Amino acid sequence: MKYHQKNIKTYTISWLTYCFLIAIAIFGINFFIDPLWYNDGNKITKKNYAYNERLSKTNYFLNHMDQYDCVLLGSSVSIVFDTKLIKGSECYNFSVSAGGLYEYTAYLKYLKSIGFSPKKIYIEVNFGFVKPTYDLSRLPNFIKSFNEPDSIYKSYTSIDSLTFSLKNLMGLSPYQHMYDQNFVALTRKDLIFPFSPKVDYLYRSPAEPPSHEVLKLYKELINIFPESIYIGYVYPQSPWITSMYYTHNYLDQNLDIILSLSSFFDEFYDFSFPVDYLENNKITYDGSHFYEFVFIEIARMLNENQGVIGVRINDTPNYKQLYFKNIKSFIKSKSE
Image (tube, rainbow, N blue to C red):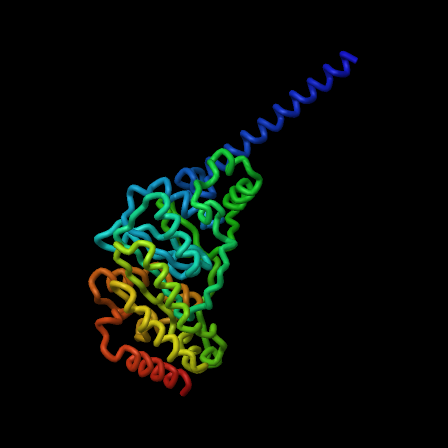
């Protein structure tokens, strides 16, 4: 009996030791690869692929919050915007893939709950106004409950994090961007193809515009930090994409909403405004996601109100008429 009990004790100690060593190994791998940015990124290969961006972006921000006085909230089309290009502010890019209006609101409420008070807030406005739905399923629970994220010890002893680390080493990621060691996003040229639209592209179905109810959601967003300066911008878009809204009779309603929305913001820009620069298919890989160098021009407009792309709506008389004129001209040139 004693021998049997001794064996059980020996096996238990051996099993616990084995589990402890496995946990240490998992933690060590995750610590050095750092797929969720608890500790400033991948220390081994220096390549940081995107996994669970909502958690990673928050982790990085919480570790460097004292360096910022500004945030930018957007979707995947704004992820490669290097906000160091924005003058006069230290702005953090909180953009995430498939980010939406309800998430922007949740993030700002969370930032307020932790005592962060931004001087400026940049808000990306989706031109298609994909109808906002109350879907916060991708958002980490601690954001919704105003708590802290899981500790690095809990996160980095998990199999999920180990999976991210192993995928990182193999260069596997579902996203078309990655991050450098300064947490600046870069387009992955190995995963993209040239944007080569043809005439039939003009008649594809875009997202339907929402009702003016969407304006109430933006008002709620802006009221979270009433003392901050809010700068809104419609992200750049190829005229090939914009033309879909025209050919389906959605453009008029979208522009009306943009004009109404612009009055809520301290500054408001439209980078989808049809200009020759946007007709170059080599500056985008799908008509909505643009390469990093395009954001240099966007930053010029934001900083100096001049550049080859975008208009400041408040400074553009007959904005809507000019928009229609330019897009009609583009459609005519491609249909001939």
